[in-house]
Length: 250
Image (tube, rainbow, N blue to C red; front, side, top):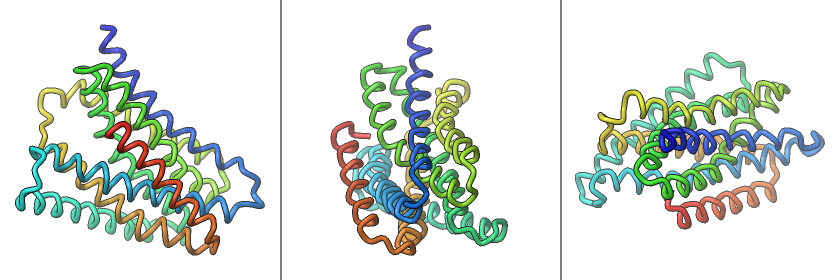
């Protein structure tokens, strides 16, 4: 019973750490353009690095950890499906949302991160159920990289709507999706989830994040013409994710 509670509590705490990314919305508004430019560049480098160094290698890991030609093709196909899915969502949002690129970025980030967080919650739950120590280490790594993911949602939503309430709620929803993954794993997926499905989910998520990072977050960051903030955001994001990936092997 105690282990079951911990298996839910650990992914919940890892997911809810996303809320910490909400606090940059309280920085003085005279630094608005610098904050937005830095946050978008930071989030872009986080998403790019986690895709290349964590999601894609993990996808290979679930395909028997081999770099065989068929496995590379399978991963590339699902990554491209993720990119196409992101493009379709982007196009749909352009039709629905009045020319607010920041707001659209916030919504795209929510969608990408929910898709990312649900399998993370599933993985953390299953890991904790089988190995408590490994589950705690995994959740700590996830919590660290959920903070900049929270920034990727909260900052665009706040500065496009001028509503901290919306920024908080949207960030909370993204973080809570990790706990939802744990619930789904417990109720439905524990007996049926397999390595191929996890590989597909990770590959699609990587595709969405790569598209969002390269074609949405970074170009929007550059548009604010704050080169120092952009460079600092990119470097800091890469350093943090390298630390997480190689120390905790997320």
